[in-house]
Every structure is written in structure tokens, then in C-alpha cells.
Length: 526
View 1 (spheres, one colour):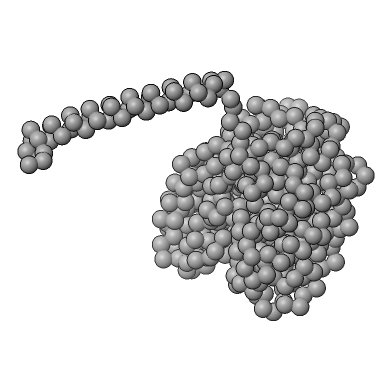
View 2: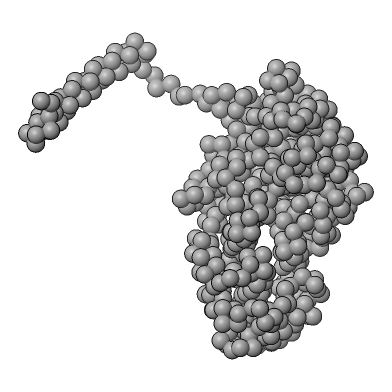
């Protein structure tokens, strides 16, 4: 069993891995090529076609890699045509009719739609975890088979399922980018995107869901669950993954299918329901030990007018035009008596006073539910530029195991952390944030907590009251301390004044030279 101290140790290797896995590097180019093949087809329909093929390629890549290895081990008793060889490694068995090489060979044939449908059906037949999950309507007449063949050729050129691609989560990142582009093409507003791994990792590292019921009411592609299980595997013997039970719900049908695929790929069992968590809560009696979520930001058409008297609104009815505090209270409603939650929200949730949001936030704070607030760096998400934050709630802030932090809130301003992975997207390593939180809680092997100006501050409830129950970390952490360079103030001012005078004189000299040159050209003052 890995010790607490070992779990908390940050290393340059971990940071390097975070950076290496930050981007696949060709999402935009791949999207442009795929979108060019869409023609007049509606984006909502085309989405199923493209994502289904990419997933099938993922399965095939993993299968082919294992097949090659087993073929090399034939002499030692391995059988590459034995489905159990693959299932033992949580790799899907791909029957002959579903192998990508066959699809690629048939890509230019008019029957390619039927070939793909047969491939999808064969995989579902031989892999019960994928029953009713894969799209099987490629043979329909409305789908241009020439364009479908071109799309298969395009997908053939990317590798999404071998060991290296899996370690970099290529499939997740391609899906993230494609879903965001489809959402834009369909005119939808935020929320259908895959949560960046660094954000999920931070939520998991802070909550540490080792055992119990883990719930995500808007689970998207199941990234929270995947990271939770990866965390357990990394910090225990691996057998401990049986100590957690997974519950999720997703309203978007395509994304729900992706969630099922994502868990099935990794051999993770979970109860993932399809439906609207507000209006058709499929886990109504669930009280979860851990809740991790990334709800869609600032949704206005969530049907709040039909739920004004709902039992979940213990801290006040959320505004009809914004679902942020409906999500917060839905999460609180599903927390077990000793449960903890971490979730992403738009920054406005920390300070808005519109439509009673300030009153709801005040009630949550006075109920001593708010444990920690984290302001995230910008440019983390593909599909929205809205600044985001993390809320951490706890129903048991003094459990006898850690330091009593009741009537205190930890504020962490992480906006300056991270690095640009390309021109428009940022990533960050979560270790420093998680370490500060665990030190603040007084966990063993982490070291003592200290406020760090500009980064973290443990604020009392009275301080929060004085700030009008605004939870923006920047209000509390103060300015970063500037390192003293050792130069006496009087000497520094004398040096800077002389430097300023020199620059003024140089500026005057340059102005005179420019004026003289303009005069020679006939453009000077007359």
C-alpha cells in the first residue's frame, strides 16, 4: 500500500508526463478534414457517424496491438484467435468482420455502409458491455457512401488505441474537440465537453475516492470515473477498485453512449443512466460518499419554472434562468451524511447576487458546507472560454481524523499556474493545489499548512461575512510577496531617477532626429 507521504510527493517526472499528454496536436486539422466530408448533412446526425468510427478505430488499434503480441507468443502457448486472451486484459475481442483492415479494404465499395453496420453489430454481439451502445445506421440511403469511405480513409490515418495513445488519452481529446465543434455547429451552449484531465485529476487528488459510492449527475464521457479508478490503481494494489461503486447520469444520448464505451474499454462497471438529472433523476435515493461533476455552465433553459417547489432546494429555489445553483443543491441533496463533493462551475457562481443566488450561497456557507474554493487558470476547456472555478463541499468537516476546520474556508488562487500547450489552450499540474489542501486539513505526511500570499489563504467565516459571502479567492489570498533584492530604498530611488532622466534625454534626442529626417523629406513643420 502506498503511504500518504508517497502519494503526495510531486516530481518533475509527473509534471513532464502531464505536459507530454497535454494535446494530441492534430485535433483541429482532423476536424477540418472530417467536417469537409459532412457536405449538407446536419451536424447532429454526422456526429454519430464520426464518433462511432473513431471509437471503432480505438477498439481495433488496441486489438491489433494485442494480436501482434500474441502472434509472437504462439510458441509459448498464446492463441491470437482466442477471445479470452483479450478479455483477460480488458481489451475488446474484435471478430473478423469488424476488424479495421476489412473496413479499410471495403471503404471505396458502395456496400461500405452495410460493412460498417455489420462490424458494429459483431462487436456488440461478442462484447455484451457494449450492447445497444454503438451506432448501427451507416447503411441508410441518406448517408453518402463515397463520403463515408473517405471518412474511413481519414480515420485510418490516426492511431487512438495503442498503448502510447491510451497513455496520452488521445481518444478522449479527439472526442473533446469534436464534441465541442459539433455543439457549436448545432448551436448548443456549453456543457457537452469532456473535462480536461488536469481538472479531473485535481478533483480526484483532493477528494481521494478510495471507497464508497461515487456519483456524477452530469457524467459526460465518464472522465471523472475513469480518473477515480486510475487514482485507486496508482495508489493501491489495484484490487481496491472493487471498493467503489459508480453511479452516473447523462442527458445527451450520444455522450451517454460515449460514457458507456469509456467505462467498458477500461473494464469498469458502473450504473450509468440516460436522462435529465433535474426532471428525471434516475438515482433518486442515492446518497453518495463522493460526488465529482462538471455541470454545463449558466444553462438558462433547464426547466426551472417546473421545479420551484422541489425538495432538493433546501437552501432556496434557484433562478429559473440559470441552473448553476440547481446543480449545487442537487449535489448537496445526494451527499451522504459524511460525504464530500468537488465540482466545476463558472466563476460567476462565486459572486453573483442576481435572482437570489447570493442568498443561496450565503445559506450554503452558513450551513458550514463550503470547504474549499479554487480559482482555475483560464483557457483550459476547448468549448468555452468562460473562466471556471472548483467548489469543494463537505458534510463532515470534523471527522476526528483531521484538523477541525469548521467555520473556515480554504481559498486557493491558481489562475497563474500552468503552461500553454498550444496557442489557445492551457494545462496545469495539480500537485501543488492538492498538497496545500491536504496540508490545510492536517493530513499525515504532507507537512504543516501556511498561508501563501497570492496563492492560498485560510479565511474565517467572519472574514467571509465581511466580504458579503463572496467566495472569489482573489479577495482573500492577497498579493504575492515580492522578493527583496537587498538594495536600500534611497539608493534604488536615486538609481531609478537617474535612469529615468537618461531615458528622457534619449527620447528627446530621438524625437529631434526623426523631426530632422521628416523635414528633409518635406514633411516637417513649416
